[in-house]
Length: 200
Image (cartoon, rainbow, N blue to C red; front, side, top):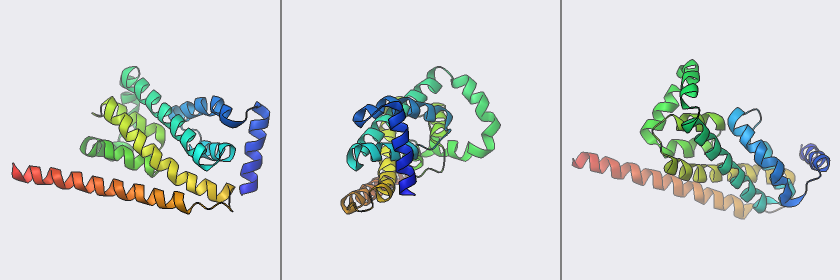
């Protein structure tokens, strides 16, 4: 599997004549397209970045393009296409209504969870956030954190396939610690809110 991925990536880069960090000139627009249409998994771009730039640089570039894509899609849907998209979402009201409720109840934590665990497409996350009560600032922060978590997980997976001899124990341990901090932070905020509500 690793050889197939490497050969496909090498063919794409050779065809486009891109190398090193220049790969961002193709992956950035691809990330925006993926953010709107979701026609291919974002993990494809993570594989591309990791193979071309190595694990750490690949993670950072993947993080950058994912943030740009998330903000572009959110901004367009919130300020330009909100009415049109809201009408379109009525067709899928039953399918995504529960997630919309979670957006209203848990706000940025829902985005962080959905960015981390790809159970809902990236474009749908941005669409739902744009028509919910989540403001641009909190959305940007939650996308920063959620995309970092998502990319960390897939970078571990991709590096184990593309670089099977490379020691990724530090990266894996850092990712586990990062997730543990998020869980503790979430529980702390939930407990504090519950304490305040009981106090009033």
